[in-house]
Image (cartoon, rainbow, N blue to C red; front, top):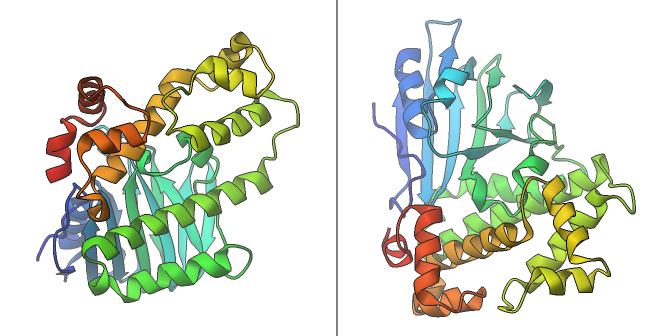
Length: 320
């Protein structure tokens, strides 16, 4: 039984394929390939196959298996350091995803997201095929608390944005071998951006902020900041002035979201830098140029805060 590498950075070359003939083998395989998982299976005649492409910190895995359950328990969560989202696209068969006191029944074409940092159960009664896209929390350009509103929520593949995004995801599953180099890198992150767009749309439908509330204001301010991240002069005072509120009011809005204006700006800038440093198309740009592109003009300061955020200096991270 081969092991499919989890998303730990870098491009692992060709598509990795691994097969299990017993459920015990499968439990080990999926735990090594994703995050530690437990499982249950009611049949002795089990068969399962994983086909995976790992690009940077994203894992794209096609799962084909006999019906069974996988469980993410608090004890298993305690053994994990990195926090991931997993997105499932049901390709054939039916699945049930349970998390955060919600339950989603998934039919072919449907999409659902879940968070590896909280318990979940994923059950398939019969043979199935699904595509799993796994990526760290900080890859998605949405607050974690916002995505938490969508865990175990069925996003239909035959209506709305699902009619466009579901076929794109299906093509990823059918063309894992083509996802390599700069093209594969871009396509993988395009998939994440499409998912973020779908999530934003779902959130706007399900929880439209009441005009004039802090939630409504926070959403507008975050969009403004995202558009101005490259401006090194971006500051709380300027942001407050652009929204006709006091700086004190601005800080209050972010305090209610359990963060600060400055830390949110810094986090978004660092994430943009992180993605650019791993983008093959930007390989000829210096670390300093990438940092300056997102508002970090002091190279030494940028190196220190990047290392604090991601565990290694930007030059080392870029070679990873």
